[in-house]
Image 1: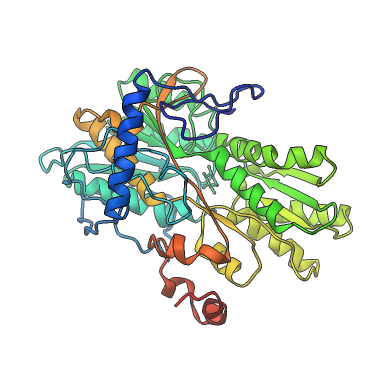
Image 2: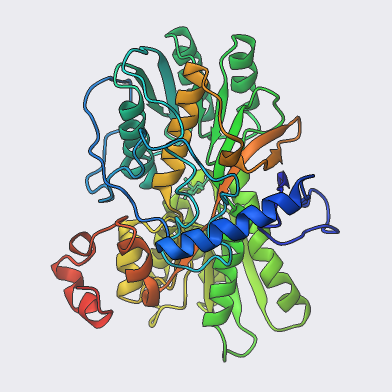
Length: 456
Ligand code: BGC
């Protein structure tokens, strides 16, 4: 389902009048005051040159890990930004969805006020749980988990984090959540395998007085959700689709294949909706054909490869572009096309700015990805978890008064801004943000492509 988002400032597009569960952006009562503050903040931010990241070193110790997943090598290079000891004076006008205008430079614009507001404690010794959904997509073990743990440990060196990865199994995640509650977790940070089924986890936590933060994916139809931290996921789909359409300019009646994400992930529906909002008018105008469309169980790259293989067979290899919902499914689609001998490859979309995805973009195998700045996402979640654990107030500025309705209640929400990445702006986005270093991207195999793209 698409979440109904209530935003105090019109940071996104007005969606009134859209069908079904359209997103409604509604003005807050003090809109004028907030607008004035926003203008002042924008001027200050511009004058200060935007949010330069402050580097702090993570502290050691304190993590109880009951992980089932191995840690893949190669984690993003950035260190935690924003000292937890920083001044709590967050601007009331901070925009949780990034710099107004959304200039694609780094993707973390506007998030600098969203962390650093809680008072760290080295006397607290509570326990929280971080429950992530899967390991086939690289981000969870290589970015979300390390960023979250490092930042939380800085805030609370003596606290414990119970960590589990559900390996894409909703029943496993339910058991992991129950075990975390039994083992004394006082806050759950939950990225659900199944957005609807996870309501049962939130209900159980709520019955035990344990607050739940929906991390990256919404938890639907439950009142037991205290915060939702994610990206503007409909915008992710729009960026993917618009970049693909732009790449297809000049192709007569282009024929595309859509490889969407997992039907149990609420985000997948939002990506798909954003993509269709770009494609459908073109289809109606007879300017584009969506020849085949698949939902991909478990976001599985192997499954995506099968889907693409089927599509190629059905279409006699005639495919002008592929909408793949993330870098993992893109890798599957690309593998199928290479196996079918298609050369050159048509433009393929993706998401997550995985290292392998960025490298495929450099050598022209993948056309684009969507960079979502996972570090601020994880750190905001860590700070919210710490505040809920220690009973500290969350300043209004963190959500800016925005809520997302999950079918049962309006959940205070923070939706960060995604950024489209092609060969042209790798340097200005993932490299500028230190999500990946040039050294990590430009291994010998990619040295020539890097030189050509000016990545040195
Ligand atoms: C996340 C994506 C990720 C996908 C597969 C989505 O909910 O937002 O970043 O690629 O799940 O795990």
